[in-house]
Length: 101
Image (cartoon, rainbow, N blue to C red):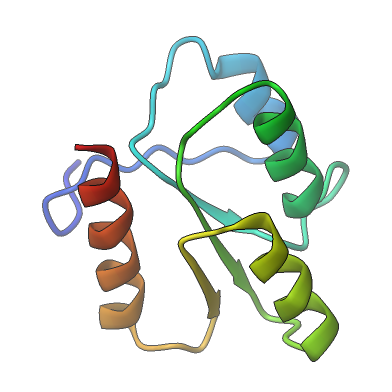
């Protein structure tokens, strides 16, 4: 199913993504920071240390200055809150995909 012209893939956890990452080659990752098991930050760190150049967009419902700073330090494309307008999310995805092209 295409969503706004993109083919989304969803995973129930960071661990599930890592198990299937050879099958799915995303142009970007929209990554929740608060996950059960491995956190979004831990997954991004694992990907970066493995040489991945997939752009990451963080999203969270638990916004605070420490979390924003941690996200900024990763070099993510964007840091979003779950209540941000959908157009902001789409714009961040568009920027990430253009970076890959």
